[in-house]
Image (cartoon, rainbow, N blue to C red; front, side):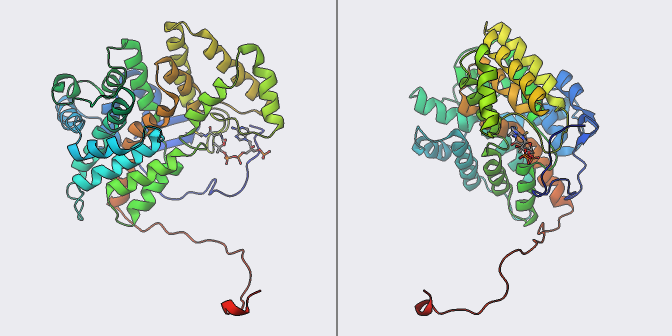
Length: 380
Ligand code: COA
């Protein structure tokens, strides 16, 4: 048993609904639609997993080809969305760029009120999301507009991991990176009633549209207690200059009652099953780029946190170093989480819509008792 003290509140431990999409914390396993996350991470592509989350079954070859063809076609952003992205300041947070980008998409290809084009909209959001970040990045960082049209061959062909990494870096990247990113997208894709997924379900329970629900999910994911933890974990690693200083710095942080980002979990008690997978990839990537120090620092932090607080790394902790080794800017870590988790969100939105009931819980009132209204001029 963990010694981690659980606080009441935050709906901890409350069953807030039913789902057939994912099991979290059932033993130590994580399953998407019955499939073990370890098997999916080893054998599947992110696109197969996205199909599974959306439609309940793994696709056959033909289904996957059709799915990918449609998905990849949405990487070519509408011109109006490109214009909007150009207007977003260079120093905006990329999570805000994603939020605005997905919201903008909804104005140019709307979901019908009877949701009859929901499949099309789902693929539009999933397909276009990497391009939103990439377009804004290229425009502001490299001062160039991404030319999706003349590069159609690769834009419409490569898997999400390769498309994202190679468009970001504007060059071929090692196959190891593509594999690592593919695994990371699978690990991040779905996690039951986490804060952002629950947000998307609440929004869709009002019969609102997919874009609005996903934009709400992005807002919830941005916070450092949720998706923003991967960015915050990298900041933690950066704040520690070398392996030798880990213990002293970490001790101070705990004395100051600081939250250590990338550690702990609301549902898991002794470990996050996704950690062993991403940790291996982080090690491999670190070795491949000749940066052992960052990985070593991470391991010392992990050991220290377990010995001092019985807290374990969650998926975000080693995702931070893994992404760093692939040359990705820290502020892009959580947007990558969006690109992946959108598949889980949309699976949940579809599920919510199938048997919808407005999500509207009650609150326990703890405010003052009844009192008489005092007119403004009589208030002291
Ligand atoms: N660093 C330091 N202490 C932590 C901690 C962390 N990352 N996570 C939990 N704790 C401690 C709390 O300080 C608290 O101790 P206290 O009772 O002495 O005050 C106790 O453990 C319970 O924490 P609490 O935040 O109430 O539990 P929770 O179930 O609400 O928290 C998280 C779950 C994920 C929000 C929490 O572990 C956290 O903030 N982690 C860091 C952010 C993160 O990595 N988020 C991504 C999650 S996948």
